[in-house]
Length: 329
Image (cartoon, rainbow, N blue to C red):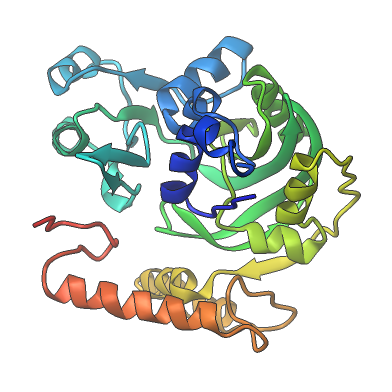
């Protein structure tokens, strides 16, 4: 059985699942199902069909169509790539949502949308910005029926305007479970998935952000709280019955290298909250860490090596400060 932890390695396994399973087991859905989460336009079309609340979303074909929505949108907006990973000339190209993807004018909307279109030849999604806290609902499903479930509340993110969670806690709320289960049931999903919501602070309604049809970045939190998704998935694909049981709420986990350090550096810019930021960041009481471990230090060594390599690329002009590749030569 072959496990993968990142999108760039999970997607090829899904795409080649039928051929690979002649010799092994691929514990992820086949491409026809996986594409429903990879292509965010398809995700939101399904959500709209089954009545899952989501940001207002505009799906366009090319930059020239932006003028058709110029008078229909309110700012700020989020310009989101339809797929995080796209293969160009058989090479993966990964596009992250950074602070630049949050736009406040039509000029910014046109510039960022055109840049993404020129990079991957696909127009990004144009979405309403939803203010509020982020939550994740993680599940293992059997043809859409959940057999294991976990939730987390995002306490810190980088970029702070909305990005990967750097610090989060285990959590449960029925109003998050229902739409997540309904959406994956509509996809007839098999295996693991993380359904991400943001609870709109204007009306208290959870709005769909995306679905990751793979293991998620905050997976160590679920394991620390008592839901070992990789082992449960292994057992499920062996045909064994699984019982996830309950998990402990309020357990925290931290992605220190480099996520939480970047959060700390960017949040320090706000002088009025500087002491509170320092107090939050330096607290180590009852902490779980995503990769820091005295018994297994090599992941931390690998993370440090990657940080140094990316810093060198920034100095050389090959990456920007958000980690995106800018020089592909």
